[in-house]
Image 1: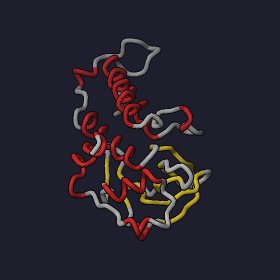
Image 2 (image 1 turned 120 degrees about the vertical axis):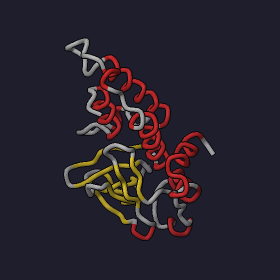
Image 3 (image 1 turned 30 degrees about the vertical axis):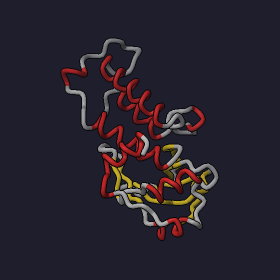
Image 4 (image 1 turned 30 degrees about the horizontal axis):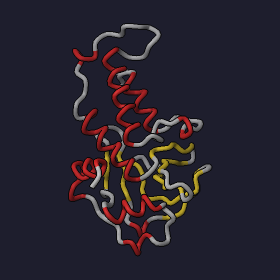
Amino acid sequence: MNACQRLIRSEWGQALCAYEPASLTPWPLGNDNLVFLTEMGLPPHATDGGNLVIRFYAAEAFHFMRVHDVHGICIGETDVGVAVLVDAHTGHVWAGDATGCTFMNASLEALLCCMAMYHQEFIACPLNAEDEGESDDDDLPGTPATRARAERLRARLNAIDPLALHESTQGEDVSMWAYIVEEVEYGVI
């Protein structure tokens, strides 16, 4: 078991439901995602402890879906009804609806690992008002503490999934994790 899988197991433990290999054969999810789904699985519900809540489907409910430029397999949805898709060509994970698509992660394992890390290291350990301090520079976002926290989050995300913040994954909108880093930097979350 690798470090990401240990982190995922520590976050969702017995809630993880492995998929039967035969139930995944019609779906072009990418080899890494197929191995992850059959060996580790997904929890029925996953949250980062903040604003992201995903309800993952059973394999019988997977379906093909095209959202803007992403042609993929819908494997779940957020609590606000945004589809969670695995790109049929790359295996990358996207969130999308009629308003657009947002890159989430390079794989399902990376998505759950990033969510667990963010919950355990950032949401469960928020800055208190005293730690946040005052803004020290009108040209920079947030405070020294929120900028340092955002930089630590960037480093952790890059270590888990180099595509999470990579410019190639930024379309018209920033990726999901780039948005979260920005919110942390400004002290919003």
